[in-house]
Image (cartoon, rainbow, N blue to C red; front, side, top):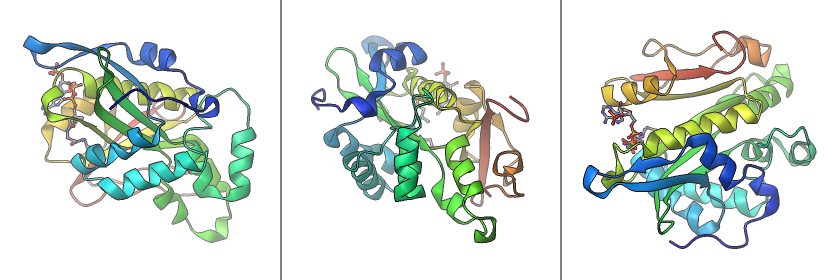
Length: 248
Ligand SMILES: CC(C)(COP(=O)(O)OP(=O)(O)OC[C@H]1O[C@@H](n2cnc3c(N)ncnc32)[C@H](O)[C@@H]1OP(=O)(O)O)[C@@H](O)C(=O)NCCC(=O)NCCS
């Protein structure tokens, strides 16, 4: 896949250079074919369509997820509120068209590419969990939903093409997501994994996440202002990284 042209300035608030320095440059691939890898925003339709592969690998709704990413990108929302500059224009515009657009403005789609030929070899998507936030009791109004969108980010999925695993690419993607969430002013980056997958437990704990006891819900009271939090799917464990709040 070729490097993107015509990227829109608004969606590039965090530059390739900033992302690269946030993640460091990962050395990827088996020892005999180690290659230098860069992490940056995915922001062309072709690149976002490629997310069907990584979302599929992670069991996160391959084609449907990729189609939603493309739609959010085409609508001009994807990742537009993540630079932490204090310019709320994007947020205000998104509020006018609804919480879904605001959630997309706080969502990042990252791609890991080889430095030599810009070949995509891994992807990550992180942003507010609108499904959970939209399920909050409507009697509390929009305030908890908006707080959740602005201050929580869920690592929806990360995946690396099989031939490039165990070379630091997944770690570089997640490290960039951590830096992005922190810059954007989130209190928390979290996600969940299948409890029996000890490789993933090692992967996330090695990246500085706290692992919750299996099957235990999270408590978002300090963020949402109401007593609520997402519950894991059966057999899943949450991992959390707080930037401000309970365990920083
Ligand atoms: C999980 C995944 C993204 C990790 O990507 P990766 O590029 O192989 O990970 P890294 O090389 O950055 O791993 C960093 C560290 O995490 C740990 N780790 C990663 N994968 C591991 C595994 N399968 N078993 C044990 N430890 C593992 C190791 O400590 C590793 O460091 P080391 O290789 O020096 O020992 C990749 O295995 C993948 O795409 N899996 C399929 C999709 C998936 O399950 N995604 C997660 C759910 S959303």
